[in-house]
Length: 516
Image (cartoon, rainbow, N blue to C red; front, side):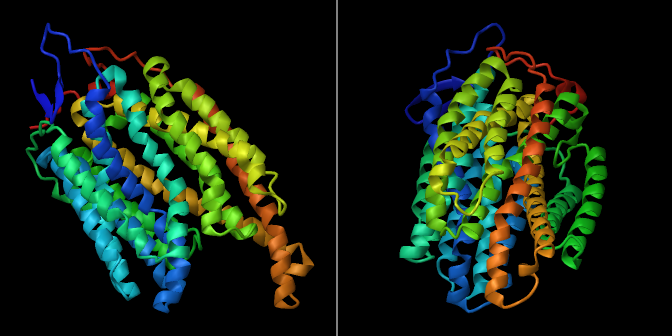
């Protein structure tokens, strides 16, 4: 039995002794360590939007091409994708607390370095350092929360952790846009330093030590192939947004695909694999993660496309776009704890169905946007989209984790986060491809957009943009409807018991495996 001592927080038993029930759960006991985890996650996720806002300013600052500066985003993404698969093994080997605090330190140091360079090349290097630290934070934090939470309160606690996941990306453009427009781009990195120091000091004091799992082997082939596979695939699909037949895209997809196949073969044969792929033998887990991909893909109709419409078609600045989208972030933050609370009582099925129905209703309204659309016209759909996301995102993550053996949860969060990184890149690339393809088709049928002076052509293309966005929103709406149907097929699963006993198909699939 391991007891957790968190400063002045009362002792909690992580596992119950046979015959003795666990002490009554009180949320206040977890609030202190949750503050450290949430502040770290919020800092990392908030910063993912920073460079998108600052790129145009940095083009002027460094006197380089946009293609060069895009590597500040791509390099960060690849570093993040590369380290995510390692998070579970490192947590088992060195302890989740040590890995989380180290990652926060590395991200904070990277942020400080990012505020210093006077050349694009050094900024790219420092962003990679940031990504190496930031990639560990979310999977380790999710595993941490799951290990600390009673099995019948997982949804509620995970819902609280999930607040920064949806709130930070929406508030990011507001903060970043204001800093870039009225102060200096360097401040989008400098603001991370006090947050990182707070998260580290608070975490050092408050985060309980979780027992390390004994790791008998060192999966060197997996540690080489895993980062290569997920980083290369993420790069390939992100380059697909420009062209699916370009050399960079094909190199990423083919190289990443080959590395992924080799990685899967190695992991299925390894006694102590880097990622526990055997959980896919559970039909419930496999179906749930497929539904998560569909949900994640459809959500980009509400998350990714609308900001692009406001900025590219309507001419909104980054700061005004952030303010317009703020109701969506606020609705997500309000609904996230409610979604977690309901998950503990009714399971995931109806939360996904209701959540996706709200998102689908929002996307349907987006299909009518035009050049007269204003922020007030989007208020209702934005609230609907935010409410739907908050209601289902973390319950779906919680559902996936509960389908895995408790002792392998750190490996499963690494697995799901690594796959989400690839799906996110694929979703963006696919949406951009549909949008540009539709705009090209419309331009070919419009004489005004095929020649003449540059001003008239630009004006014609701008007038066609809303129709291209409407079409793309319609595609995302269809995907969301498919997600609703699949959500109805999700199994609620057995209601978690107070003693934490679990008997899932995933556990039976890995029966006989021992962590040491």
